[in-house]
Length: 64
Image (cartoon, rainbow, N blue to C red; front, top):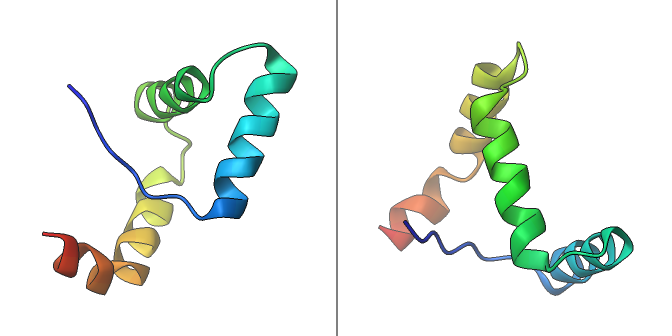
């Protein structure tokens, strides 16, 4: 499955910097971060996820 995400220029630069420091491609780092998030959610993941979804509800509505 492929998932597309929008990042600001600053976020993309930070992702590229982190990936470069780790010696991997940005796509690999992003995938690893998502896999880690969904396989090992923090105890407060649901609370954080709900807050993010509420904060970005209008954006998600327009994208949908």
